[in-house]
Every structure is written in C-alpha cells, then in structure tokens.
Image 1 (cartoon, rainbow, N blue to C red):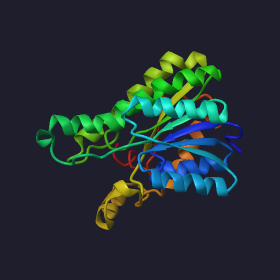
Image 2: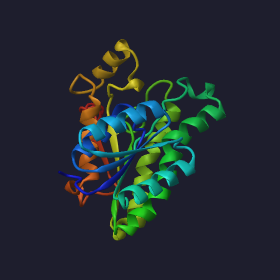
Image 3: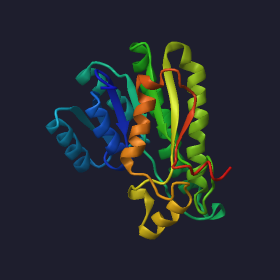
Length: 249
C-alpha cells in the first residue's frame, strides 16, 4: 500500500475529487483527516471508510479560516500520531461573469477559497511535516488559468494559476528539509462544479481524449504526488487533463 502508515489531511473532502481521494488514500493505508463544511456528507464518508477497515476523522470547518487548518493538524497529531501528507483540494468557481462585472468582494471570495486557503493550509501543515522530517503537500489547481482562459472565469483562473507559484516557493523554502510541494492540474472532471450535461459535453470537446475525467482518475494522480513514487518531484505542476494542454500548444 502506497500510503501505509501515513497520516493525511484532505480538504474539500465531502464530494468530488476530495471524496475520491479520501477513499483511495484510505485504501492505500493512510489514516485520513477529512476537512469540509458539510458535516453530513463528511460523516457519511468517515463511516464508509471505517466500514471498509480504514481510519478516518472528520473536521468540519471553512478552509478560509486558519483555525480550521490548525484543528485539522492537531487532530492528525493527537488521533493518528503525526502528519505526513496534505492534499489541499478545496475549491470554488465563484461568480462567472466578465472581469469588469466582478465585484471586489466576489474576487476576494474566489481567491480566498482557491489560493489563500492553500496558503493557510500549508502554513499550518508545514511545521507538522517538519516534525516528521519531511512530507508531501499537494494542491489542486486547474487547466483553467494554466493552459486556457474561459469566459467569465478570470478570478478562478488567477487563483488557480497562483498555486503554481505557491508550490515553487514552498519547494525553494523547504525542499532541503524534505518537504515536497506540487500542484495537480486536472482537466474537466465529473463533479458538482462541472455543470449540466451540455456544459460537460462542451468541456469534453476541449480535451484530446474527448471526455472529462472521473474524480477517481484525478485522485490517482494525487496519490502519485502524495506517495514516495514521486520522491524526487517538487515545485512542479502535473497535468491530469486528458491532453487539454497538449492540444492548446
């Protein structure tokens, strides 16, 4: 098992990519601390993992609040004995309209969830990783803002693109101490954020594979970055986008 004996925090864990990662990481031996706002879905996920023989704990909270991240780290340390991996996955599309029509508050809301929350997570998680002499941080970016711009998504694109700079900074600051940081750049994925059937069909047309991903496929890419399979990978951005970027170049 690729994460046997590891303790992992996953944010945005109640649905989509986060939920798929929680199931996969637990199946690969990790004890998982699951963070999200929707307590009902989160507790259902914990029960499902435990029924399968895994170890899981829910921390209900808002990722834009630094106290949520501190609580998750404390939970990992007190319940499971430490922290080795964090998958900072929570995201928000936010208001979808042309840039000049976005209010400053709408802009701030999107950056808070997609970028500032990643900083707050890393800020709380890195000291705990250093106590274990290293570990892995994974951040969910997007093909939006990295290979394409989409109408009405300037704030989202800016926030997700910022994660690439964040992981490079963390890699430079903490690489010698054994902390790795990487961004995962999914293509269109069949989650709540993917829209209706027509929107998903349009998104599929952007990809070389002419389909969007299942959340489990993105979780598998996250597992690679979280595990020792990527032991010499840091400061990078991994495309898991069905060839979206390849056909845009």
